[in-house]
Length: 474
Image 1 (cartoon, rainbow, N blue to C red):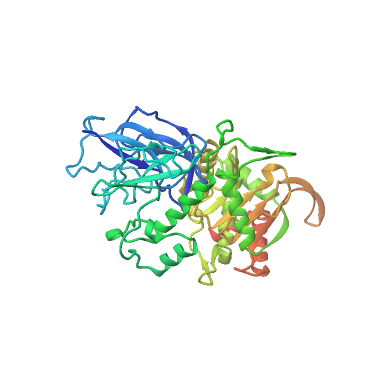
Image 2: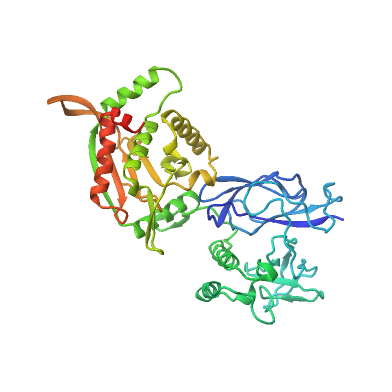
């Protein structure tokens, strides 16, 4: 007999709490294999193909293309077993897990639950007398409670639960638990109290049903996303901008929404300041031309600027840091994970070159090329878009000379590079036409004062004007 299992949107890592369904890759009735991608989603970080950890037949899909789902929300249900796909099942009746690397599910079996929850065979009635069309949800093995959800004509949600005796309770998310609430941490109680969440409505994922902080945060995220994704009239697509007199409303979501949140947080939390200087880049351009004339592979200008940045950060480590205001500490970081701004069709993204301080110009060129191509094709992973400690922003590609960039929170500084253009310049006491670039440094004034920031920027400018200065650090 086939067993129907529910596959929920897994934790895609790096603190992501939701994702937008871009394209379904399977239909109801399709046979899927273990680790076969079933849906393409867009997070605030990247486009991701989500593989299913079960082999069987797809019996239901949850969510339309263009809708947003919180982490942990049902994606599909799959009928597994001999009757469904010929796959074998473990003797205890639980499904064999996937070996996929996505966070949130894997090869281990799910912990046993104190209460088995099954879809109700009957359609419950709403409190106002209207009938509900039941949407059966399979049994998840992730330790969280399951429910059978139904929607009435107004889009309201009612739930039905089957307890051990087979009796059904409808209307509330879950019946009140008798006895004390299984919570140990006072922080968990305070978090629930401050957000108006009744802990009796939760089933904990800890040992013996202990309610953890993650359970409370999951419930709060799910409630927030459900509020934002309320049903819309059928005639209006969920992704269509809402028009208003004299303008058009465009939803802030996906990459654009993530950028808006991060920049707003940066401006709110970081007391930033900016200094800038013009530099003669003629010798740097000549040095690059000589390197490339010596043979392949070619060295990019961005790689040379990155090499200069890592050398400068070794001299001024204050700018390779982050601020922990809760502990009131500045955390100076050992490794330089260098982010660089890249404009794509999906918006601005900041891929990160990990351990940039340990790479030479040739290795940096190769990694910049790889990450840039991945950004253009939308295949960057969340890990490749997070973890930066310092950002290099080459806005000269847009044909502008200067800018005051916003720091990429929670980093402490960003170096901006304008276009390199011929300009009149006094060189060796005489007026000459030289290749001039404007450099700007925006920094968190909490980590250092202007003297440190000025010293960093002056060292960068000296290396641009006289690349031989870098020989001291090789």
